[in-house]
Length: 475
Image 1 (cartoon, rainbow, N blue to C red):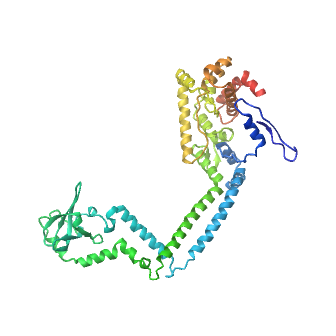
Image 2: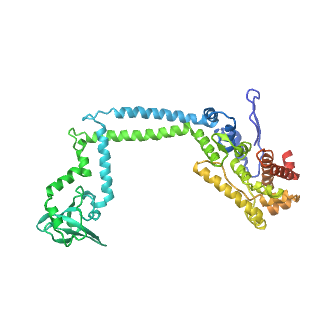
């Protein structure tokens, strides 16, 4: 499809010519002609070249931001922005209403603190597993921890001296108040006093247990139990008035606070989305600037020499091209080698046969080494882009190398080059050659490229632009 839409205010209508291709069906073309127009979607993307050009104007960041956000893409975002603004405003109103709930106690936020404590207690119970409601496991008890143990004569105070966790059961070594040491199963430990600091257990406690038994004799079991009830996590939960609400309003307050928390989460999410849409292109601009700074193309908002080169290029990834020049990969190359390496930077979806390219590189180790250097450059650029979530393509394509090398070396047997060194459709190769000529000319005309290399690339462009490649541009 080719044509023009017509000039606004001058042409009453636009004209378009559709050429039927064997790969296209007549029904598809009729659908395009007779069907409704497809939605117009902005394809605006901030590349390294466009960002460098904006910085080269010398304008302040506020002016540059207004320029960036004057794009059609930002205009299309306005519809989403307006819808989100309405939604955020509605959520803020609903949140104000929810916060106005009058709890019988007069302190609505109290139920929030209660819910937080309850969630912590339940999480601790779940982490402890099936026996969680009895408290922490005996296995966690360190030597010197006091416990209430079950004996035939009744419950008594004991001092845990060691825990032997075997394959199928856990045995606990316990020192009793009268000085005897026994081993008992975990089930005989009724309660571990976690809120009471453990006693110091000396190394020779088995030979001299009297000091420990004297300390145990001074302790009162009822006091220890009361301390557990008043200082444990469950005690903190029970201390909140909501635990036993005098007005019987715990369920109602709980539901209201749950709804309040849900509104706060939704408002935070929508506000974040709104800010993302408002500053989408500007954030992308700042990320591109950070990558340019990382590669010494920009410093403090000013373009350096590499940045000037980036600003003068038209490419899907100007930074990749500039970095290849900066690292001197093409400096000592011959005309054919420089053109061949530059063909790896051509953005073309339909490339040549990869098997032919691999065989070609085996025969040209010098080109293979330089290709590895270019791949290293591409990897470093790709890594920086991943860090800042930038979508620019970073690809080194070898499919055109064999055919470009032969054509740039002066061979004129086009059919042989296409058949033996490319393996694809000749139209794809011609299109790639035209794009290669464009890249070579841009570099040749750039004042940031070393003069000797610029002259070499200019000659390479003229050598390639001959024969059928030249004729294709004249049609």
